[in-house]
Image (tube, rainbow, N blue to C red; front, side, top):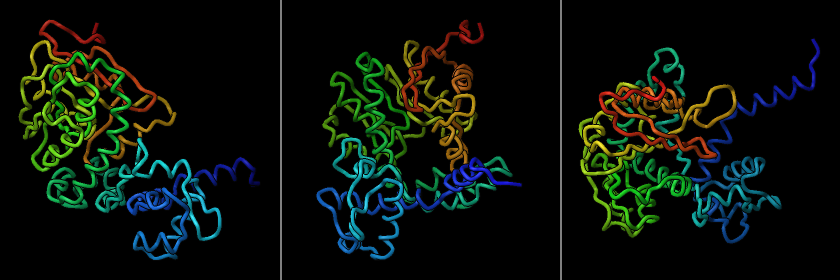
Length: 347
């Protein structure tokens, strides 16, 4: 059997796809703030090692690896500088992703037992750590704080993505259900001075919300509320937001959340979902990656538009419209259904 050029190209591509080194090296460089140390000038590996408190030989290997992929550049041996990709890892960049790629040992250990998820149909994380993902975050403040910083970084992009896509100025009071430390809501309130907000989450999560809201200059227009969205959500909003919440839960728990929101809403209220929508076919879509990650860690799932329509219908909502972005995320607007209404797809 002869080996063709196509075979060789496929082999090289498969090796690239199986790589663990670059993703972990990138996350480690972000954790070490290497890009910030290069933001004003090129530096020698000795300087960078001193600034990051790392071994020079090991750091050189890491940065040389990343430079081969266009993250950093080594203009002369032993000296490194930023590239456009590395610029995004600096704190000064308006779309900074410095904190977006956490290196979480607990997550990696769960992923190392992906086989458990495949054989059992259950998330690997609880089997590895002895408790569900969100309970682990509650009991490990450092991990929870690191995840919050990653979400803050992502929220800067998501606010820019959706702040002009939807008519937020029509909302008087927006309740952000499962809103974490309030970073997304704070961004929206900064864009829309006529809007008020409520950020609602568990006590250990919203503990930092006051700081985030103060920093954004919107604390006076935002209430911080504590509780579990499985039990209840605050009443009084004319719109309720679930941003990348339902993908963390299977259909049973997602329905519990939606029922709690439905119970708090006025008949003319609006439900807004921001989620990835899984497309059909074989084309690459980051939502397909998020789906597997949600399942391995928390037992959740990302869904197609049809699946969301079915889920919302089962919870007493009517999916009115879907606003898509060039990214995987979309905004879905739904309203409470009356007893005589049927889903648009039922008609």
